[in-house]
Image (tube, rainbow, N blue to C red; front, side):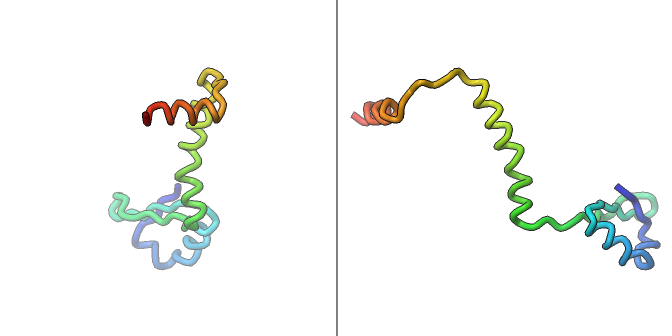
Length: 85
């Protein structure tokens, strides 16, 4: 992550946008304090994949730690229906 002073922003904006488009994140500072961040735009599809991917992978890993389940679909439906009586 690169930092750029706000006083340099106008003269470097085109180059900074090219760098952001290439995937770099740039922090804009004023008097040494971060005030803004330029980050690459993520398409809605990519954003959903990014937000959902990690929890799904965690769930898949958790499922592998469970003991084997020998229940058939008929057993599951029977147990469900038994609770409705």
